[in-house]
Length: 153
Image (cartoon, rainbow, N blue to C red):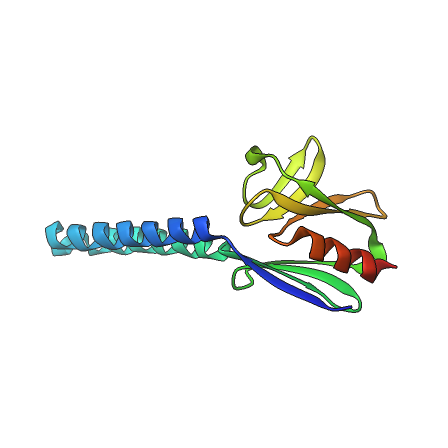
């Protein structure tokens, strides 16, 4: 069974756009008020702004793909990717994340698990044969759970 779904994190997208507008406004006003001999400082500030936008844009979406051998996840345009061999997956179940688990990629010590999420609180928790636990956020938990369970049998 193949499965492919991309969830968009609309809040992260909105935050990225707001930050972009604020950075553009700050850059334009600073450029008008800054003497030309501070151009090196402007470059450093611009580089930092670009880096912040790059990181924010990296977590705007989460794509989950299941093929014959792997369950793959990819944030945004692919700067962060992870794949799990379906032979290593022991179980999958629908769970609900707490609000404080956050969005993005997170590691928790208690309970010990890794979370990949861009929006909402619904997720599918997979347990691997080596004892590790992962949660994959999704806006269609029933379909994802069914796809994983069908693929590991």
